[in-house]
Length: 94
Image (cartoon, rainbow, N blue to C red; front, side):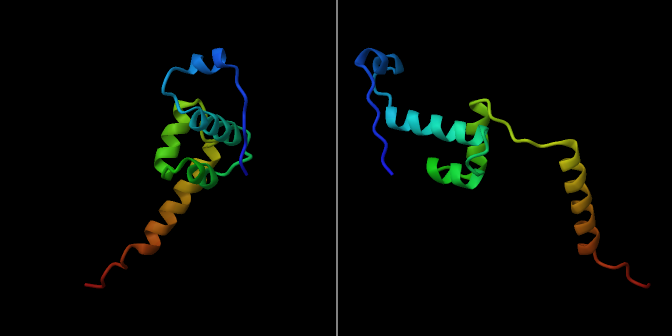
């Protein structure tokens, strides 16, 4: 889909000479899509041509943070510990 916007010259000039307004609009759309959970992180990274790591920095710079609770941390810590135990070699019977 292609979207066309019309901006008065005096408003467009407020973004500064040489600013890629198409990119600025896309970044704004992606930022709001992430903030409202209408876009997944994968979709947002794909639209902007960023890695998942780069997307995290982009979103933080635009005031959008991951919804990550203490319960999420506890669950992931428990999963990590369980996987570590499963992966560790059995003690040898010496």
